[in-house]
Image (cartoon, rainbow, N blue to C red; front, side, top):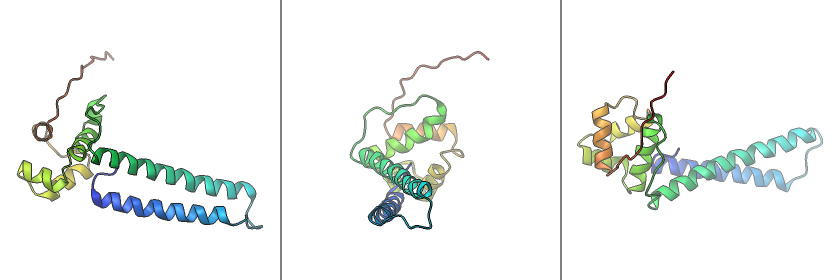
Length: 144
């Protein structure tokens, strides 16, 4: 998941390199010293990686342009992803969120880099409040 503009630019650069390499491979005939299956697998691997990068770019761009008004939260494990998505969809940078919370931007970077593992529950609630999130999900008791 792309979490900020820096990662977005890096992902764009990687996608461009994969695209260029794939185009080069498709433009030349298979070298005789490379097995046909290996040649096909090499191109398929590049194409798959490029598709993954392009999907991440599309997801980030969709969020950045206002994104969906409802984000899926099917477990507490998904909360960090949803907080990051909500920040991006709200048009806030990590620096903007830091200012609203009264913390340094590096703290937001650390929290997001670790998927909020070191943030307290009280802090997670405050972030959700600042982002204007409302959780309307039922909780299921799973007997084990």
